[in-house]
Image 1 (cartoon, rainbow, N blue to C red):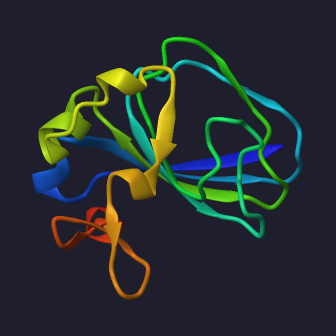
Image 2: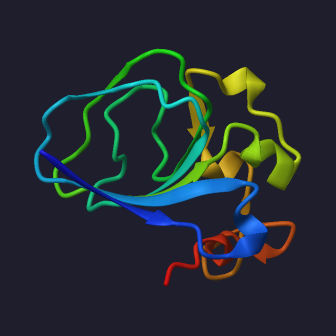
Length: 136
């Protein structure tokens, strides 16, 4: 079973790029069929396991997922919690100037696009990614 909560964007400068933020938790390892969302997502994983998906394409703790045009079956590990940044369809590109066209129906580890600072936090051009995630 999963539990999901969505949060609106409250920072005016991010409204052109980000649709919402999400928090999802999984109580079991039941398979989940995820419908095509039509927008890119960055997922930060908080899990006691090395990989939150038992899906061959996603072996990193945090991932960037491109626009999905088909259903995807995932098998999350129990007690996994995800924090998501849900972009508008062109929001990721407009914010980061990085095309995700090659990642339609797929994704890649967040570490392939963003570097980490001395504390292990992801950043883009020296700006912490968590700075995007202001929620009141």
